[in-house]
Image 1: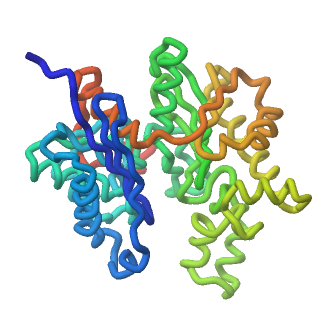
Image 2: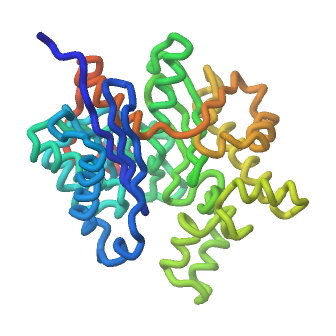
Length: 370
């Protein structure tokens, strides 16, 4: 008899916490955000060194909540530090595990999701998956090329939530994701605006390398010459410049806070600067949506606004004034990363999706022909 009920544990490590969710098929039966002691995290020289600490924390949490590891059929871990790959659900193999564990490509805690899922699965003889890791790259060739040979645009994006939102919207309108053209704007700590063309994210702003709209703590696009002048001014170190781009820039640099709730309250209190900066970010998001509309050749089924900032009425109202005449606008606030990890694994376990194999070779190698 073919099994049709599966218990899946989703694992999503972040900078200061590890989120886990237990799912019986699509139903979430347990979810927790495990906050880690910052003093403990500081004792680890490298992020990869946190592996055993986080693994033990997950196991202790499950034990405290009377959840038997033996009852779990599969582990699904958030990914990272992989060679760029196609979207989909991957069975974690040794090559993927080693790339994530080494963090040789990108040093980020999310890579530990693969490591923890793999080690738990092998210890307890279960299956393990990674669903739409941050390294998903489905760009058109035209989207990669810049005006400087050898520098190419990269796909660094909220791939997990972007794809999950697209699948959920398609289900809502009784369609398949692969049959739709969508623009999805994920606005949270980082902001990604992607063009989904029949199941492929053909273009998007790079949320890691400084592209697209500014975000709560990221600079977004910066004119090249002024940035070069900053780099050679002698006033900033290399790490300080990089920090301004993807950690201490954006709303935080202007207003001293990266919390949009604080910004909205500033505006309510009559802070004109706060309103100008927030309006500028919204304007830049609208421009990025317009660019993705063109990338889809102006053939778009819907624009979907998601992420934590999509809960803010001011943001939605202001942004809608720019984009409402392009096509239907759908608001789906929040993020569904734990759910996405579970649903991707479930689709494979129930034979609704073909599992993919990670081969450790980038989908684009920098060669564009003569």
